[in-house]
Image 1 (cartoon, rainbow, N blue to C red):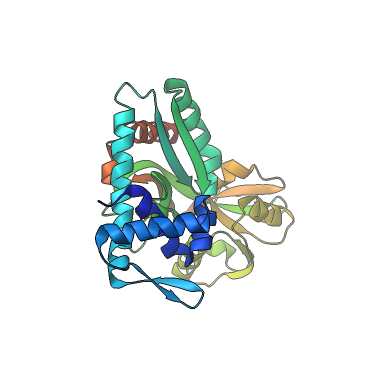
Image 2: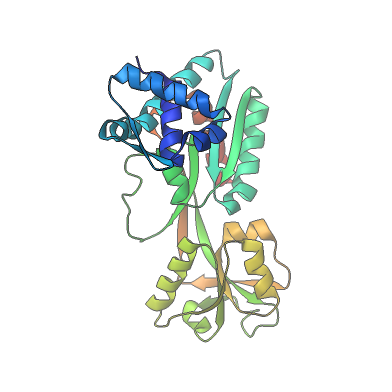
Length: 298
């Protein structure tokens, strides 16, 4: 019989490449990891690991088992959480991953409402940008992932295997210094900023910026690039360039010395909450999705 704890150990060894590193990740000793791996190999009746220098590598059987482990563990988690929540969400745990601007705007409102309605449900929060957050969901490392994609972008079917809960459409706005020639203009075309130095955001937003600008007939001169939205706003406020950010990000940083201008034509990104089909039936996960949707509608 294959035990879930043995599968978790196998995943940790596969990810870290050694018993000692896996032990540190799991909070146990190296001998304990070794013993559990021996027990797993005895259960399946074939070697799962081969020593290669100081590291471990998976055998073909080990690779097959590790590949199925994430789905198996996700299914077990779904079963455990659903059983625990039968009495009316008096218990439950949800692991939430969100991109930074979602963490500071949508998530606090949603989690405050969730706690008020279901005080026994615990939610943990970790930050990651898509596509990493989506990879974490598929790997079984979280239960709900907040993600975004831009309208018209390639890969529209990238979430085809997941449950997708739309939250809101987030429009991009331009950021310029207060003394900029366009600071008091009601709306601007992206081409009006063609000759400006640019401050770019996260990698996915950066790619979208270049695509938008090239569609308007120019390539932006990016002087600074940072994943930190307050840093983007700070650089714009200091007069070092212009930027394009989603409204949700601007709301989260409250920039000083900066003016926001409406971009025409409008460019929007779709904000969604994602989960696995098995997990969508877990009451605590379903309640979290509901509260995120309500937060997005406000």
